[in-house]
Amino acid sequence: MNDKMRLILMSCCAPCSAGAIKQLVDGEIPCIDDFIVMFFNPNIYPDSEYQKRLDEQIKYCEKLGVKYVVGDYDHNAWRNAVRGLENEPERGQRCTKCFAYRFCYARRFAQENGYNAIASVFGVSRHKDQTQVDSAAVAVCGDIKYLPIKWDENLRQKIGRESDFYRQNYCGCEFSIRKV
Ligand code: SF4
Image 1 (tube, rainbow, N blue to C red):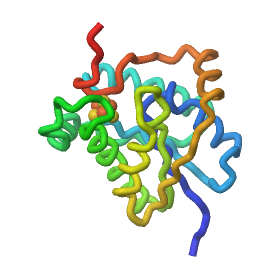
Image 2 (image 1 turned 45 degrees about the horizontal axis):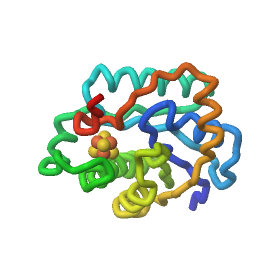
Image 3 (image 1 turned 90 degrees about the horizontal axis):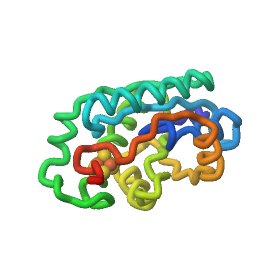
């Protein structure tokens, strides 16, 4: 039996994941033997915004020399998954569904590609509820271990200050676009 920990780190964007990726590269999370960054975010709207976030993610991964995988971008399928929850507030039931949808995809990828653990940076934004993210993951990860890692927020902010990341001002879906 292979007991090496092979992790999928789910990322929503470069600014949220930069610190976590650096920590993994530096071996700061000791139980991890190997990891890949997964960008699976069909929740992002519109597709021009999706492309900007994806480009930034790839640029950062390539800069640090880490593996990454880009999941399918099918926003219509995601819309079907959250149907009926359009008017939920951020942190409400639509978000629970959205997290679960993305963790399900990661679980399938893990099962098919020899990974045995999943973590995410979905909860690092101050607009997010880490407990909600963790609960959604635990509910769907099944035989793939979910690791509720508490990432170094100071490092994330430091890298952010030193970088010229594209920064969005909303979570991702059309329902989270803030009216200014
Ligand atoms: S606000 Fe963010 S987490 Fe919630 S449904 Fe929209 S994209 Fe998903």
